[in-house]
Length: 535
Ligand code: GLN
Image (cartoon, rainbow, N blue to C red; front, side, top):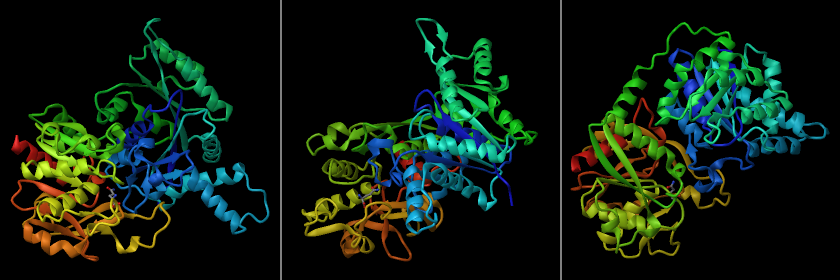
């Protein structure tokens, strides 16, 4: 049974400084020294989970093994640490309030006035401590979403203040991530915004122990001294975080700046064993020394916002490194893709991926992308809605069922080759009701999938309501599209392939969610390999 120590990560000056990457990098360094670490994200919005959010809002919704719909930062945590997260790793203000209000309705507060302090802050603290109860972790890193000074973040910062007081300085520590801007006109780095954001933290009673400073230029000794003096931290606790080419370099940059050592010494933990980062460094070497190059089209409707397909883009980076191949992923907007321009817009790609999604916008463009890939024998990878599009396209253009569709897009179709799952028919609530989380899948002999995974029984994560309609299975298989992965319990079709095509794989699940630096996903690795072979 381990008694965890807590590291809190807050952000100041501006959003988008990359708290998630800093938290994940620190966690990776501590893990590399033999500590068992997990990371938690507290999100200050009122949605109970990001499952009901449009990807344009905060990017993709990341799904964990236990079926929690969570913030995309959890994806970074898993990609960096190579250990699964769960619902306990992501808590939103909505979830906190929902619990408190449900408790109140049950009469749990015995007639008391229910208030932000202590009821909301107590529930926040309970959620922070919950992860530690397993006894599995030496260190728990809790990232507070938002920026210090936001109204929404205040109860979280107050909870951090209380926890620091309860735990004491050897068992808790606050890292404040901040921006040190460079003013070209003055030719200087400016420390004032950082001083002000530390001041806002102090107003709530939190003194940060470590400053991680995002900067375009190196912090000189004078700037470091100023930051330490005016923000009241030890000089070794001013950590420079310069912009780097890839997020995967950040752990090495933080190691150089001794972030892990400073944290360990403040928490009175030993830093004797040097971090073992050999696999990580090998990955970075391959990433920066490619021997080949491929162009991949990412066909989707949320392409304006790269975060909408975060895990897919990261999985391509892992798979690229595994093949020592530079993967140029280019977005193709499905809304502007048609039979008339598909050949022109998709010319020159070595592989085509059709992305997940919801609703009918851009669907005809996705079908054209599938058709182009299938007919021209270009490696094709369809994920979730992308797999469903592969099925619809095959029904229309090979089986000649012109009306074939998914009942999501056309409720009245006479040929619902993709149809609502039985369990979904009675559902009226939108939040948290999809088929979510890990499900088993059995791979068929002779399939590309079996070749990629190298084993027959796999498990992958899901997030969808619709599925392949097994009534059509025989007709599809007779014409060359077969189910190469099947859920052994329910018989649901999880993977489709097309015989006679070099690499055509559609998956109902989300393989991108399980790709990590140390375990690049086998389907992405094979897809890139197929693209390299085509080239
Ligand atoms: N909209 C489809 C469904 O609900 C696909 C979902 C997805 O791509 N994640 O089944």
